[in-house]
Image (cartoon, rainbow, N blue to C red):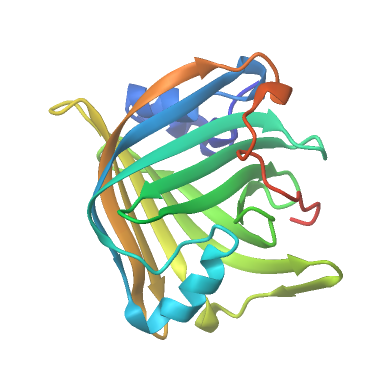
Length: 226
């Protein structure tokens, strides 16, 4: 079985740096987790978006806080969710002076949409289509597309003018032997809303079974609708 990223990239997966291929190349059958730890050199948010960012933070989706030299961790586990979908976690924790802020997501490959769908937050109520590509620097480039909201019986497409688009680039630098990541969230109404840039190293751990995934990694609720 191939990873969800190799599945969507196909032959373009070979354009990624070997260390990026390693980080994005495992699946649930491999029983491996990638645990990254490093520092965000800069984190910034638009104060005009403080309220929606605060509301998002209640479900581990971004947050209204910024700074420099912020320690962080990122935990990527691959497993099959209760609907049988190949899933990869993105659990990011940022250690500010007085509080740990968390930004969670789970990504699946949607056969229905023939693309990766990213469920933001710890309850999978916001589903985002992703476009995945290979950057010129050997990194992986992720851009967000259509967003859909699911909560109980409620479901609707989020109007593009009222939401944001995110661009994520993760690459590996031979010069410092570290992974680099850059995230920029833009809004048609407010311009730049949330961004950060940093570096990290990654270790790989053996996961005996999906039941061995630590508490707090999997979402509190799994959403069937994609």
